[in-house]
Image 1 (cartoon, rainbow, N blue to C red):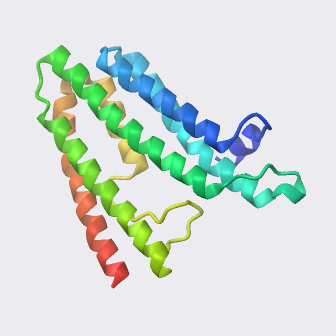
Image 2: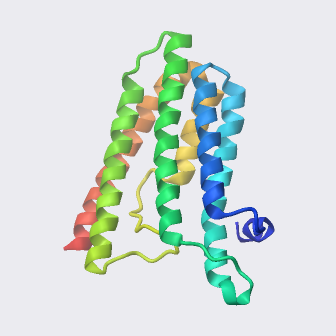
Length: 200
Protein backbone atom coordinates (compact mmCIF):
# COMPACT_ATOMS: atom_id res chain seq x y z
CA UNK A 1 0.00 0.00 0.00
CA UNK A 2 2.99 2.32 0.42
CA UNK A 3 3.41 2.62 -3.34
CA UNK A 4 -0.26 3.40 -3.81
CA UNK A 5 -0.13 5.96 -1.00
CA UNK A 6 2.81 7.65 -2.69
CA UNK A 7 0.94 7.77 -6.00
CA UNK A 8 -2.10 9.28 -4.26
CA UNK A 9 -0.10 11.91 -2.40
CA UNK A 10 -1.52 14.94 -4.16
CA UNK A 11 -2.60 18.31 -2.68
CA UNK A 12 -6.29 17.68 -3.39
CA UNK A 13 -6.30 14.16 -1.92
CA UNK A 14 -6.25 13.82 1.84
CA UNK A 15 -6.66 10.80 4.14
CA UNK A 16 -9.87 12.31 5.51
CA UNK A 17 -11.30 12.76 2.02
CA UNK A 18 -10.48 9.13 1.27
CA UNK A 19 -12.30 8.09 4.45
CA UNK A 20 -15.37 10.09 3.45
CA UNK A 21 -15.22 8.73 -0.11
CA UNK A 22 -15.01 5.21 1.29
CA UNK A 23 -18.02 5.90 3.49
CA UNK A 24 -20.11 7.10 0.54
CA UNK A 25 -19.05 4.12 -1.58
CA UNK A 26 -19.80 1.70 1.25
CA UNK A 27 -23.27 3.14 1.78
CA UNK A 28 -23.89 2.91 -1.96
CA UNK A 29 -22.90 -0.76 -1.81
CA UNK A 30 -25.35 -1.39 1.04
CA UNK A 31 -28.11 0.40 -0.85
CA UNK A 32 -27.39 -1.63 -3.98
CA UNK A 33 -27.60 -4.85 -1.97
CA UNK A 34 -30.94 -3.78 -0.50
CA UNK A 35 -32.18 -3.28 -4.08
CA UNK A 36 -30.75 -6.71 -5.00
CA UNK A 37 -28.26 -5.23 -7.44
CA UNK A 38 -25.76 -7.81 -6.30
CA UNK A 39 -23.06 -7.28 -8.93
CA UNK A 40 -22.93 -3.52 -8.39
CA UNK A 41 -23.00 -4.01 -4.62
CA UNK A 42 -19.99 -6.34 -4.87
CA UNK A 43 -17.98 -3.92 -7.01
CA UNK A 44 -18.74 -1.03 -4.65
CA UNK A 45 -17.96 -3.14 -1.57
CA UNK A 46 -14.53 -4.11 -2.94
CA UNK A 47 -13.88 -0.50 -3.98
CA UNK A 48 -14.80 0.61 -0.46
CA UNK A 49 -12.32 -1.83 1.04
CA UNK A 50 -9.61 -0.64 -1.35
CA UNK A 51 -10.18 3.02 -0.48
CA UNK A 52 -10.33 2.16 3.23
CA UNK A 53 -6.94 0.50 2.93
CA UNK A 54 -5.34 3.65 1.50
CA UNK A 55 -6.27 6.41 3.95
CA UNK A 56 -4.08 5.04 6.76
CA UNK A 57 -0.91 4.56 4.65
CA UNK A 58 -1.38 8.05 3.16
CA UNK A 59 -1.77 9.57 6.63
CA UNK A 60 1.35 7.76 7.88
CA UNK A 61 3.29 8.87 4.80
CA UNK A 62 2.41 12.52 5.35
CA UNK A 63 3.19 12.29 9.04
CA UNK A 64 6.59 10.74 8.29
CA UNK A 65 7.51 13.24 5.57
CA UNK A 66 6.37 16.26 7.59
CA UNK A 67 5.82 19.84 6.47
CA UNK A 68 9.53 20.67 6.63
CA UNK A 69 10.22 18.17 3.84
CA UNK A 70 7.38 19.33 1.68
CA UNK A 71 4.75 17.03 3.14
CA UNK A 72 1.23 18.13 3.90
CA UNK A 73 0.46 17.70 7.59
CA UNK A 74 -2.37 15.55 8.86
CA UNK A 75 -4.06 15.24 12.24
CA UNK A 76 -3.76 11.48 12.67
CA UNK A 77 -5.98 11.41 15.77
CA UNK A 78 -8.91 13.10 14.04
CA UNK A 79 -8.29 11.05 10.93
CA UNK A 80 -8.19 7.80 12.89
CA UNK A 81 -11.46 8.70 14.57
CA UNK A 82 -13.08 9.48 11.20
CA UNK A 83 -11.75 6.26 9.68
CA UNK A 84 -13.02 3.94 12.42
CA UNK A 85 -16.36 5.76 12.53
CA UNK A 86 -16.77 5.28 8.78
CA UNK A 87 -15.85 1.60 9.10
CA UNK A 88 -18.50 1.00 11.75
CA UNK A 89 -21.15 2.75 9.65
CA UNK A 90 -20.23 0.79 6.53
CA UNK A 91 -20.06 -2.60 8.26
CA UNK A 92 -23.44 -2.09 9.88
CA UNK A 93 -25.02 -0.74 6.71
CA UNK A 94 -23.60 -3.64 4.70
CA UNK A 95 -25.24 -6.20 6.98
CA UNK A 96 -28.58 -4.36 6.94
CA UNK A 97 -28.46 -3.87 3.17
CA UNK A 98 -27.65 -7.49 2.42
CA UNK A 99 -30.16 -8.69 5.01
CA UNK A 100 -32.92 -6.57 3.51
CA UNK A 101 -32.14 -7.71 -0.03
CA UNK A 102 -31.95 -11.37 0.97
CA UNK A 103 -35.13 -11.29 3.06
CA UNK A 104 -37.03 -9.53 0.26
CA UNK A 105 -35.65 -11.62 -2.58
CA UNK A 106 -35.29 -15.07 -1.05
CA UNK A 107 -37.92 -15.10 1.72
CA UNK A 108 -35.15 -15.58 4.27
CA UNK A 109 -35.00 -14.80 7.99
CA UNK A 110 -33.50 -11.66 9.52
CA UNK A 111 -32.14 -13.64 12.47
CA UNK A 112 -28.66 -14.57 11.11
CA UNK A 113 -28.04 -10.97 10.06
CA UNK A 114 -29.19 -9.67 13.45
CA UNK A 115 -26.72 -12.08 15.08
CA UNK A 116 -23.92 -10.77 12.86
CA UNK A 117 -24.76 -7.23 13.97
CA UNK A 118 -24.80 -8.39 17.60
CA UNK A 119 -21.37 -10.00 17.21
CA UNK A 120 -20.06 -6.85 15.50
CA UNK A 121 -21.40 -4.78 18.39
CA UNK A 122 -19.52 -6.90 20.93
CA UNK A 123 -16.30 -6.79 18.91
CA UNK A 124 -16.50 -3.03 18.48
CA UNK A 125 -17.22 -2.42 22.15
CA UNK A 126 -14.38 -4.68 23.23
CA UNK A 127 -11.66 -3.22 21.06
CA UNK A 128 -12.72 0.38 21.64
CA UNK A 129 -12.82 -0.17 25.40
CA UNK A 130 -9.44 -1.86 25.30
CA UNK A 131 -7.92 0.89 23.18
CA UNK A 132 -9.19 3.58 25.57
CA UNK A 133 -7.96 1.82 28.72
CA UNK A 134 -4.65 0.86 27.11
CA UNK A 135 -4.05 4.49 26.14
CA UNK A 136 -4.86 5.72 29.65
CA UNK A 137 -2.61 3.14 31.31
CA UNK A 138 0.28 3.39 28.86
CA UNK A 139 -0.18 -0.10 27.41
CA UNK A 140 -0.90 0.82 23.82
CA UNK A 141 0.01 -1.54 20.98
CA UNK A 142 2.07 0.50 18.55
CA UNK A 143 1.53 -0.65 14.98
CA UNK A 144 1.14 2.73 13.27
CA UNK A 145 -2.64 2.85 13.66
CA UNK A 146 -4.58 5.35 15.74
CA UNK A 147 -6.13 2.69 17.98
CA UNK A 148 -4.75 -0.38 19.73
CA UNK A 149 -6.18 -3.42 17.98
CA UNK A 150 -6.57 -6.84 19.57
CA UNK A 151 -6.11 -9.70 17.14
CA UNK A 152 -8.80 -12.31 16.61
CA UNK A 153 -10.10 -14.99 14.29
CA UNK A 154 -12.18 -12.51 12.28
CA UNK A 155 -10.20 -9.55 11.00
CA UNK A 156 -10.15 -7.35 7.91
CA UNK A 157 -9.42 -9.98 5.25
CA UNK A 158 -11.98 -12.40 6.63
CA UNK A 159 -14.61 -9.65 6.74
CA UNK A 160 -13.97 -8.74 3.10
CA UNK A 161 -14.36 -12.39 2.11
CA UNK A 162 -17.52 -12.99 4.14
CA UNK A 163 -19.28 -9.87 2.85
CA UNK A 164 -18.18 -10.64 -0.71
CA UNK A 165 -19.59 -14.17 -0.48
CA UNK A 166 -22.98 -12.75 0.53
CA UNK A 167 -23.01 -10.65 -2.61
CA UNK A 168 -21.73 -13.38 -4.92
CA UNK A 169 -24.13 -16.02 -3.57
CA UNK A 170 -27.14 -14.09 -2.23
CA UNK A 171 -29.33 -17.19 -2.25
CA UNK A 172 -27.00 -18.68 0.37
CA UNK A 173 -26.32 -15.45 2.24
CA UNK A 174 -28.40 -16.44 5.28
CA UNK A 175 -26.39 -19.64 5.71
CA UNK A 176 -23.14 -17.74 5.29
CA UNK A 177 -24.36 -15.22 7.87
CA UNK A 178 -24.98 -18.00 10.43
CA UNK A 179 -21.39 -19.19 10.02
CA UNK A 180 -19.97 -15.66 9.99
CA UNK A 181 -21.87 -14.72 13.14
CA UNK A 182 -20.29 -17.71 14.91
CA UNK A 183 -16.81 -16.79 13.66
CA UNK A 184 -17.17 -13.18 14.78
CA UNK A 185 -18.51 -14.32 18.16
CA UNK A 186 -15.44 -16.55 18.63
CA UNK A 187 -13.25 -13.60 17.66
CA UNK A 188 -15.02 -11.40 20.21
CA UNK A 189 -14.38 -14.00 22.91
CA UNK A 190 -10.70 -14.14 21.96
CA UNK A 191 -10.44 -10.36 22.20
CA UNK A 192 -12.15 -10.24 25.59
CA UNK A 193 -9.74 -12.83 26.99
CA UNK A 194 -6.66 -11.26 25.38
CA UNK A 195 -7.62 -7.76 26.41
CA UNK A 196 -8.28 -8.74 30.01
CA UNK A 197 -4.98 -10.61 30.27
CA UNK A 198 -2.96 -7.79 28.73
CA UNK A 199 -4.43 -5.27 31.18
CA UNK A 200 -3.76 -7.36 34.32
